[in-house]
Image (cartoon, rainbow, N blue to C red; front, side, top):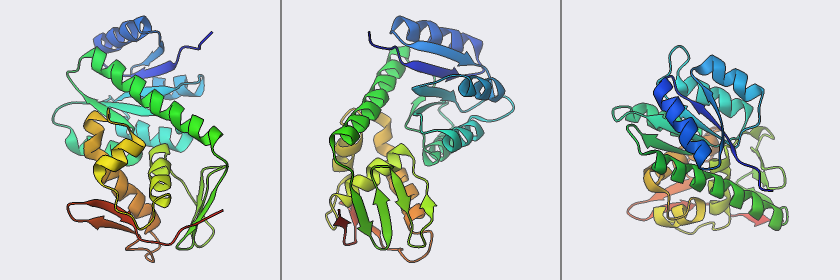
Length: 239
């Protein structure tokens, strides 16, 4: 029997929490709801979740602070709920590693579609990881070990990657010195159902670039091709 995915919904609006809980349960999801960061932390530590739906505007601890904490604890996918005027916070949330966002007011069917799309992408990534043999990428002094999804910098220090950053880096490493357009990256990473996340591909590249260039030695490791896309400008050895 297939296990129902367990979703944590965090929103201070009781009407929205109740609406989402009822609707998601009818769509064969298991739901736990929390009204603020304190309840969400407690619920998260006491349960096992496949995805978190997180409102950015929470009383007390903000949704961004909660997203930052979640990313230190887990790689569970996060879908943010944001208001129309919260674009700067939305970009920060994506930089923290959120997987998608839905703007309020929203149709619950759209949110369900995005939840299923994110869960499908996560599942497909795990399946690909099981099907493919472990690989070791070496590039510009860096090492990526796919068996443990571990990135090590030239000084031998581990650098944490979110699931999206890891997938993006593998896509670039598999195609070094080749221009990848935004559409190609969307196909490789998110599929054609990416929706609003396609506007965040530049944010994802920027986030990964900052991590790879933090030591100041690799300022041109990921290059932007004007009107074209992005290219990993490095020799890559695979073992």
